[in-house]
Length: 199
View 1: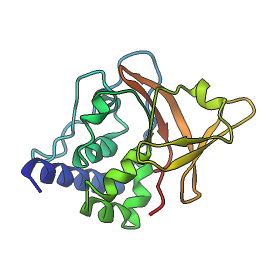
View 2: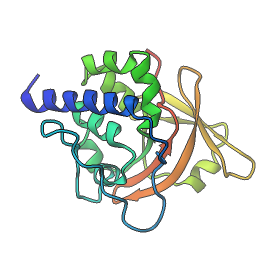
View 3: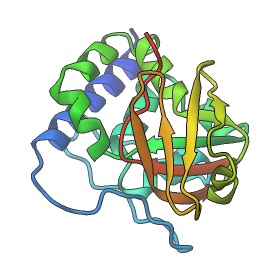
């Protein structure tokens, strides 16, 4: 593993550890205001500075949103930032809080052991081709979306379209908690859990 990837993996591990240890009750959802997203938190140490991309790509917007630090560090470790800076995608983005259960049960440690294997597969499962807004998803109740990883996830929508859920390959269902964070090359929807493909 080269120095850049080792640093990225170390950054993810530190971010996850700090996130799990934190007892703050701040809002972990992404802002959907039309203004500029808030800047990412300052570096936790000189050797594990958070990734901050100042572009308006999906990576740049997520980097500055303030609630996706773990996800952005994981993208870096899995070598996905270039892909997410081009093309057009919809990302179902777990918030920092959404990753905490995976830290507690050891899943993240297993994924980080192969950042361009299992971690990359899991992260690519959160992404679908094309730019889908919340209104688009509200019309897809009961339909399946194929992720760029290859497996599908199922969309659920309330009758009003106000609540959108996603069911992964393990049968777990999570909700979109903040929607329509726009980037030049797609849209980010914050989720309250990490969607997992089948192993």
